[in-house]
Image (tube, rainbow, N blue to C red; front, top):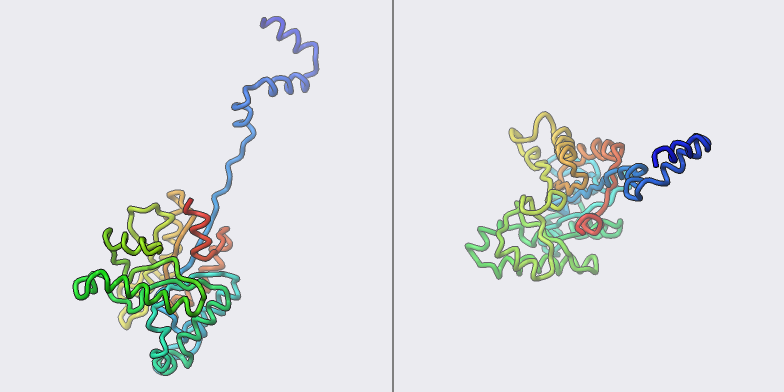
Length: 281
């Protein structure tokens, strides 16, 4: 049999023999020979807690003199759509005077309306931003669930849609309460390691940098810290990130540098709903 094969090789050209040899490979082996590894899908969804804060969104100054770049202008300039987790009390009519006097001359509700008009998502960070453990001890689970639904109702009055996501204040949650919240149709945002890394929040810790004595602000800088968190996840093969920020002047300044860098590295920015549609399958 070997003699026949060698004779056939001599009788035909080298290129034709090579073609016959490749064709003769088992289909699975041939497929492995020509396959290429698909590049990782790089997705980021940026979320912002504790708003709306008009002076950060519009880039104005507080009566105290605190200044901020405009977060909305930055996101629009970079063509980045994000998701805002708002506190319901700021959207109430009773908060108008507070927001105008203390938060840059605009009502918080009008700022949320502008977010919606520009195509950003608005999700639920509870109405009163009370710690769930403390609220449960004082008032019970029913009070917490009502606080969440109360926030959804006022958001829906602006967007026309009921929020789908809830981020508990300080991520304080426990299984029994989470089940009750999910039974109402919400997805609960979490930092818990019980869920896959792509589906849990990455805490930027930007709030540590916005106090009078920022000794806990990430070192060497907030910018370096967030970038390092992304890189550390990449080394573990994770290329989807839910980045959690807050509406703070320091955050806007950091993002003005961070967003272009992440874009250069191939990341695409999407809303939270788009992210879960792509990743949570």
